[in-house]
Image (cartoon, rainbow, N blue to C red):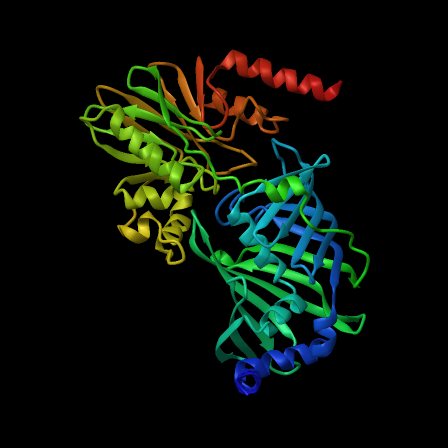
Length: 488
């Protein structure tokens, strides 16, 4: 009798859940896509096509269009039965690039396990990547509606926005998204979710589903357009040439070695301060982003706080120990590119003045004004106003102890507002993104040389933000060596 009562109660609760306004809307979406039974019977989806991946935060100037990777040989395979996905694509840089400009990517996820495959070898990647790829998999109308139909999912906050119906979905895995449905045809219009960024704090991401077609009894988009709320930048635009339902997808399970491996955790980055002259330290570490510290009469100035918020904080903390009786008061940000301006919010939270080109000011103000609630960062925890000092062509920082001349790099197709620093006493240069000994090619080597001649800089030593310290003669020899290797 108790079993009968329990079964009856369970059925009643399930029926009540099915009748909630949120579930009615999800059921309507399932019917619009091809019917609830058909949607739930789908085992796999394969999406093939081509498109673009804009290079986020790497435009020539803050207001210029983003440079793009052209995406070809695009193939996204989704195993709905097991909750797995594999994305294979070829990307070709449509801009001058110092590293590999023709790249094949092979990226997979299975629940909490994410891995990349290159040259036949699979390597596990971190938990944050796995979460990102799980959400990426939900950027498909069939996948998100099925996730919303799962009894373990939580649906809430049904609301209207223009002709759209929106509801919040927390999946059985705990991933949170907002699903938008067309009020007229009930088809999914887009999904949105919030991610956390060192550069931007909370980022609202959206993947829109456009130009539906019917394949295998269900409706699927012919275009996926992904954007972010910062400056409404497009992050991906994929045009579908072929949708396949329940095709042969092979086994998308992770290799045994990947599944048994622990998710990698970044090792602590120990920042070093290597003397490079009186009152000059090259601040290196385990990565390939450096900073340079200058000592003046009564304060310290840092050139660059790059790579990540954690790295920027570590560099700032280390800089304050190098000359402990003098305060660190300012940080020079060489350009707006996201790997170089990553520490901006940390710099502001630390109460330091930002020195940069005047063309970066508006973007930097927008970045500093953003909220960070998903993962509160230094600026969210210790809010401070932006203190900024801008320059145009040149700016001289000078007292009796030190002179640092800042110059805008002219005519550079990688970064139009790039700043380099010159210490005339030591004939020492500090530059980021003009030269790195590890680059596969040197597309702006000529521009580098032209700017040195234009500024009449006879460089003895270069303290780079990327690479290692070299003499100018060593740099020239390396550039010529790379050129020779490419022509042979």
